[in-house]
Image (cartoon, rainbow, N blue to C red; front, side):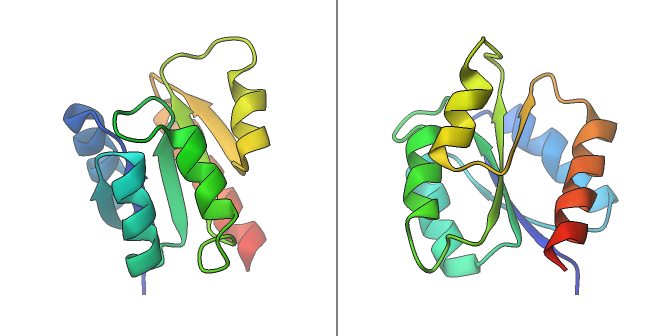
Length: 124
């Protein structure tokens, strides 16, 4: 059974790109458009990994990551924080929220897929 990845991203074009990339590499992909929907989806679907955009309406990724990592049902799910505003301190802020890794946009697809494979290898 393929690993399940939840993509939490408000930009539809970015979701399409990530969906295509992840499915190409054999992953099952589920999607949510904001942090609040992402939390609900994570609780219901129990993904193996979450790609969490940090800048979103309704609930930002930082808040969503903190809530997921403080919830018994979702605390062990690996989370990669994703942001297009790669400013100094963003990665530290993402790690403080509980992210397991961090990538900036535009996404380097080889780097991202390598990172995902590494996180899954470390999980086993």
